[in-house]
Image 1 (cartoon, protein in one colour):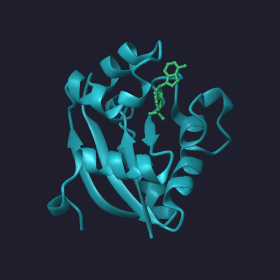
Image 2 (tube, helix red, strand yellow):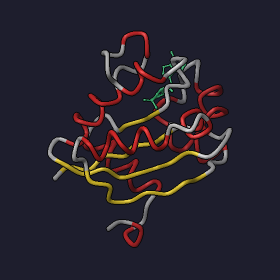
Image 3 (tube, rainbow, N blue to C red):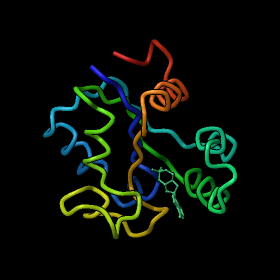
Image 4 (cartoon, rainbow, N blue to C red):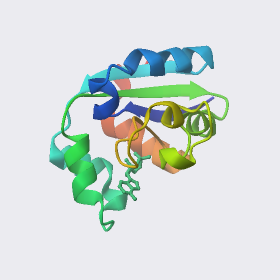
Length: 137
Ligand code: CMP
């Protein structure tokens, strides 16, 4: 069983999309192993997205990610990383496949509703960034 970090970003929480996202996760049989609502500081968002710190959008991205509550989760299942990324769709919602979360709900390349880890190493870093051993079932 593989694990991945999933986030309903501040735009998704503010727009009332938590229920839609959770329904898709349960429908596709990914198991929720941990979940909490957090409001990141900008420093916490910078730490989370440190890999993007040289990108031109880094300041705007960390402003956005610390602009309101976000739902962070650990999902588990066979090929959970790829499965969740397939459910999210491409980063740019205009390129996201039909029926994906970003295709259905995203409004902007940055405000793209959800996040998912992109590889096993990133999943290990990202799940550990938000959850300790006592917060996982
Ligand atoms: P995410 O999958 O969380 O990974 C990095 C995030 O940076 C991405 O989703 C978007 O929210 C944001 N992002 C990626 N590319 C761009 C871009 N070209 N312009 C603005 N934001 C971006």
